[in-house]
Structures are given as C-alpha cells and as structure tokens.
Amino acid sequence: MCGRIDLHTIPNHFADLFDKLNFSGTRFSYNICPTQRLLALRKSTADSNLEPVHLRWGLVPPWADDINVGARMINARCETVAQKPSFRSAFKSRRCIILANGFYEWKKVSTRSKQPFYIHRNDGQLMCFAGLWESWQSPTNEAIETTTILTTQANSALSPLHDRMPVMVSENSLESWLQPDSISDPTDLFRPWPAKALQLHPVSPAMNRPDFDQPECIAPVEINHDVQGELF
Image 1: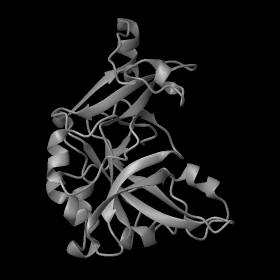
Image 2 (image 1 turned 180 degrees about the horizontal axis):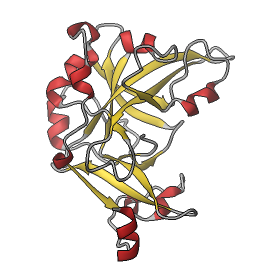
Image 3 (image 1 turned 120 degrees about the vertical axis):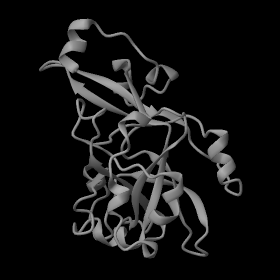
C-alpha cells in the first residue's frame, strides 16, 4: 500500500541524470495525498522522449463514468495488473515513473490509533515508483491524466507495518520499465526493494491531516518503549 508521498526536493544527482528535463514547475509537498498531483516521468507520445508531467493520483479508466472512482485506484497489485480491466491497457502502453523522496505507512497501535512512519532510501536519492497513467475525458470534455502506483510484497523492513510496498525501479531499469517492448516479462522489476537500502522512522501524527504540509511531516519523533514493543 502507498497512500501518502513526500516530494520536497529533487537531489542534484538525479537532476544531473536528466539535465535536459525541466523540473522548475514541480509542486513540492511533504504530504501528497490521493487525488492530488504527483510528479511523473514518461515517454512523450509525440516523440518518445522522456518528459516530466503532473498526474492526478488515482487512475481513472477511460470508460469510467465518474472521476471519483480514481480514489479507489491509487495502487495496483503487480501480480494482477496485466489482467485487471482497469489497468491492463495502461500496463501495455502507458507506463510512467512516480518520483518521491519517501512515503508513509501506518502501524496499528491500538483499536483507536495508528503510528505513522516515514520510509526513504539510505542514500538520500529519489524513489522511482513504477506507475501507470491514463487519460480520462470529463463531461465537460476536459482531458484529465491520472496515475496509479504499482505495489509488491513488502520486504522484511516494511512487513511489520504492512504486507505491501511500492514497486521501486532502479535508475538502470527506468528505460526497461518505460519502454514495454524492451522486456517481455517485467517480473524481475517487481521484486521488493532490498530492506537494507531503506530507512524508516516514526513521525508525528500531525501528518495524518491532509492539509499539514511542513518539514515536521518527515522529522523523527520519539515513541515510548511500550508502544515500540507493540509495533515491532
């Protein structure tokens, strides 16, 4: 599961890899929620060059009657994405990479509360999530581009929090994911990201509020030993 994302900066290393791309219009936020815009990379339909785009989080199939169905399609399971009617067309030809500094997951502490955690890469580089995108025509003939993030089985670091995690694509595999014809079976790309390459720490429950967008969202907080014992 991936239901909140942090994208507050683009590291110089990543920007240098794609020095011809313009990230100047990026909307940065520590607390991006479903139905808001995510920064994505995809192949341009005009010339197949890589382009940054902002996509509404929550994929809406072209045949959907209501854009609100996207709220239920923020994630797609990698094991079934090629067969599901909502995703299979995009899986064949409309793939993208969702960029993030990190993401959030929650662990149930009691019947009434959950503790949020922030997950990010050890090396401080961007996470590149495997995504799909679609274009949906609104009743007013507005073309709205939407996206979903693929998930896979959680690794050992994240499994105490949730049984799923985003599919993360290495920099060396970006082209393979974005160009469907380059690989007939992307199963290897769907393997969980190595646990030793990730860090996670508890953060303030204030980030549960969709309107809370401050550096405190990702800042570590102390939790008492009793709660820590219940979590892990």
